[in-house]
Image (cartoon, rainbow, N blue to C red; front, side):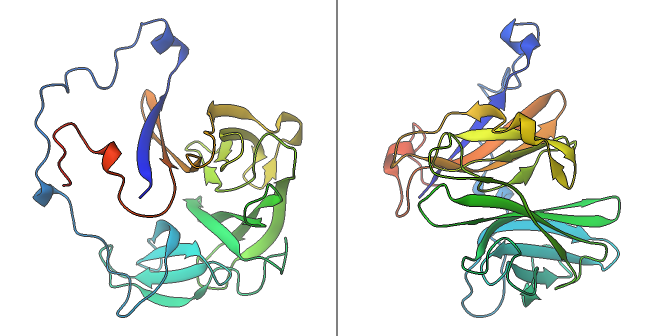
Length: 250
């Protein structure tokens, strides 16, 4: 099982010691009971593969939308956050403009000023032949997304890999990266355009040698801190070496 790491993006004030750590005072707090956390979301009745999920609430349609890797980006919806979710079709409807040979992966959906922005990637598995693309919609309905195609690409020999895009809160940067070179921040000219001159961007997390690669970045902002979540490790099974000190599995 992939280990989940939380990394703080330290500001200059933190480095100089002028800002208190967000973990200060937490050392003696008790761990929350298992009952404090909800059960996993039920997707639909019956088996379904949902990889790399992303979720957004559509207030106009009064529904929660889940998108995931597979079949031109799976599209599932439910009136309730806890489901059940029903598969309504796909985000793109047809093959991505980037390539009809490979399935799009790892969507990241954000609702901004009434428009749905879905960043995704297309890649040849195990290589750096990858492209990050974008599809947008004014309604958020299944198959309503207009595919803009690729924003930028990587290839063999580059220091980064154009996979697993995520729009950083504030809309100025796109985090990306997987297996090759670590996680980067690519500067946006706008929500639909990358500053090509700034690529590969700012490295915010080092990649680790196979089989301990990092991928799947997600950044959360709570002033004054930015929190980076990512996955590290390889499928499959449970990694007992990463258990807390008391060896609990809860």
